[in-house]
Amino acid sequence: MGAIEKFDAGLQVRREVLGEEYVNKSLSEATELTFPFQELVTEYCWGSVWTRPGLPRKIRSLINLSMLTALNRSEELKLHVRGALRNGCTKEEIVEVFLQTAIYCGVPAAVESFKIAKVVFEEFE
Image (cartoon, rainbow, N blue to C red; front, side, top):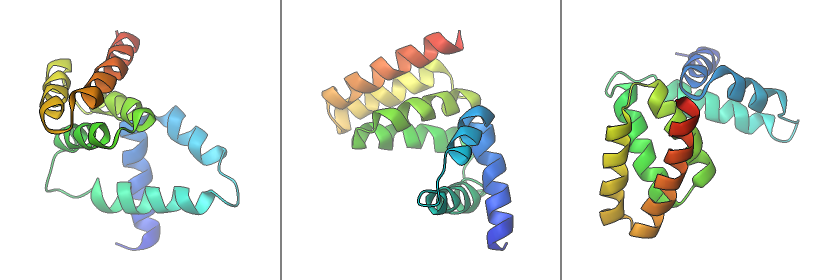
């Protein structure tokens, strides 16, 4: 698959997981300086990795939640909690991930993740 095909495939997956509105906004607000990053993320992250058949999107989402908690990336975590719900993760599964991260990443990191998840869960209800 060439770069253009990976970008197109990545754009489709990115929109399905993160939401059309978020992705369109990211692309439309990109500048000459930041558009190459949007291309890189779309092609490499979403087109090369998220499209691989080895893991279902649901599992990829749960893995992302644990990594983003470990890295303390609140804004990305909020985005990916929404994506996890879109990918079929249940609230209970997300809670279990954050309980697991409390042990391996630290309680303060998990506390922040639970706060973010609570807000997202309320938005989805």
